Length: 302
Image 1: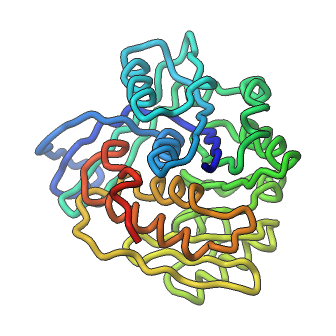
Image 2: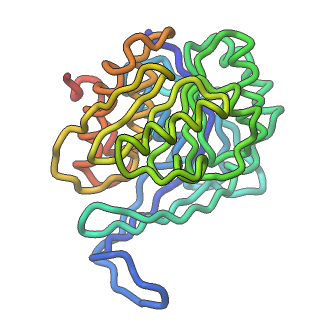
């Protein structure tokens, strides 16, 4: 069984259903409102544990009802929450998701306790990271903690996966050099490289730029079209499964959690792992919400 550690965010998602995204200054009525567990880190951790990996989570929550709600979810799935700690002052993170009738979304984030994770928290999770097969992180927690965690990982030959989301243009060079695999979508790839990703040649160009920044392995996800990978001299494309999309929330997080659970340490099965992850994501997008839409291993068949 793979051992995966995720460093990341916890959010309670407030989902607002609307016909289409509003224009600037426009007031619109909602057709529905619902609440679900979310946060990129939490989604990725839930995806990994549901994929069958032994998964530990490094994160922070507030001391509020939202925290209780999220902890109950983690315990139900058997996620190791030894390193999920509570902040006395900041509230649990929140995400406000505008979801249109076509299944596309725009998301507003309140970081809350997610932004109070410190390098001390990372040091306290040292043994969990050192004992893992893979460490995953993203950008909804402080960058300094990601660097600290990746340093521990590389000192112990642990595979590192960086999901550079939400998109940033000022990623520390040190973090990129500690990254074994970077997994941006097309928007995030453009933010990092300045190259607009629209087709296979532009994917290759963006990947090559990321290689020059120090990342050996690149996977660019392009939604319903699929995902592209580059390992320098070797690259390829994995098509997405065609399904009726209801909500794309957590699709990318599902992809990363399932990818990590399948990847061999030498990355020799990268296409197989991407197909597995793509299948899982295709199930996620057929249900509204984040963590409630992430499938279990028994539901994912290649």
